[in-house]
Image (cartoon, rainbow, N blue to C red; front, side):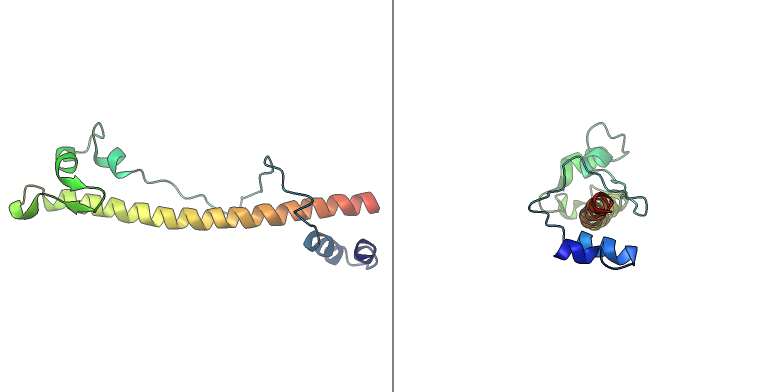
Length: 135
């Protein structure tokens, strides 16, 4: 009865929306290879890890300070009050940490949007296929 009702109105947009809304994804799961169109979204750019920016082989001018005195687990410097590590090196690491946190938040939002778009676009695609078959 619901499918017949979907085709009983003259408004094609309403028909498509009605059918798409009522598609049961448990019985018709989204295939793994279905990739939604994300043209309107910008995937955030990974700023790089602390190790890639400041660690061994990074080319960072004060990488020896980062390697010797930075504790990643606690986000602390172990040089104490000695002042071995200059303020610029500490500021660079802090700036990179902020960039990483922003990236992770932006990536989380992008992944959420991707999931929503995947669901919506798959429903629209399948609804149109059903409408085409029944027309």
